[in-house]
Image 1 (cartoon, protein in one colour):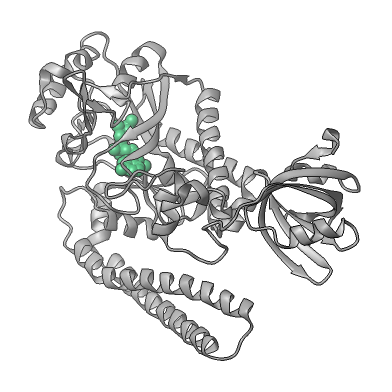
Image 2: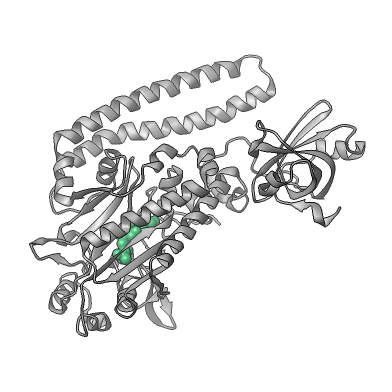
Length: 503
Ligand code: 4AD
């Protein structure tokens, strides 16, 4: 085969009418008499390759007919534009070469449970869903770097082994560092503050570790976080930076990953609205909303909606179960079986939501000023908004020691969380930092931390202290929000969770 004609599926649009060779894997196939339709994937996309008996040697035609999913092969043929085909182009095959057959590939096009797929993550990464998420994650990371690089920020690599507590003592991973205790980083922020006093505008971007005993859809023990830090900035400046940044990331994803978002069923229309300004609420206003009639009415309406959703799913299940009892073609039986698995999954999710609704309503109604907002509270606030919402000025006691107290109201700090809309919840946490030496010492002591270990950090308040601040955005939560993926474990190639590390 001529090397010249070798191309990628993403390049087929430039090759119409020409003979090319694709190298890839068999994603799916079906045969219908003298025709075979092979769906090939090559890492850049999917392409339907049409094999007609007589156009290729008979022996090859037979081989291809029995070729199993995920076998690797090269396919040569003429490129034809066809609107109905995946990707809009197909290959009329003239030759093919099997590189390595895949016998008994464990993941079939039928549905599998999460546990099974996670145990086969090394193979499941080849699925369309994972491919679409991975491509979107790539754009998110590229956009993050681009935004900060293009806006005068300097990248500072902060350490992964750390000597001080960056957020809270409960979620530290301790490691034995040649006989001395050390932690894996919870945040690069404290080191970044030191760099901001040299470079002005800085960011770090890397893996972050939290031993949080939390099994929710929003928690990983290892996740990626980008953290900008800026000298001479106030809370409003930080909010503006965050909304411009998040809008840029969303815009880049829309620009580069529309077809992936469509495949994933993401809400593209909602993403198109992600433009500054975002909504702004103080924590106190958020508490008023949670404990007021707006929330109880909202949750009641939601319960009704969930119940009608449940009814619809149940009647569809009944129809399919009936069909399965009768005489139907095998392909239809398989299709129904796959849909039933999906529907039962959806039903159990709706059931959980119905069960949680009154619990969340009670938690919201009884919310006491002073507590940190819980996951369900964040969900409620974010469900009520169609654009991201900043919640600012949290109670001092609920937040980390480094946050600056509001000099106009000493009970609260100059911080913010950014909640993604439509129920997704927090994607950013940030604050103005306490820049007064004595107040910072007091806060460190009040949280039971060892002041000695913070001597170098306190130096920053001794030698030319300035107002400064920053924030951290979690990559997996952002990818999950943008792609509409429910659980962030799907948004990192090899997830690490509190209860499970699969491979
Ligand atoms: O709100 P957090 O804890 O903020 C900080 O770490 C600050 N030091 C950042 C800063 O000001 N430089 O975490 C920031 C973000 C969260 O909003 C969330 O997106 C993500 O990090 N995050 C997690 N993502 C996945 N799993 C977890 N366990 C996470 N914990 C935080």
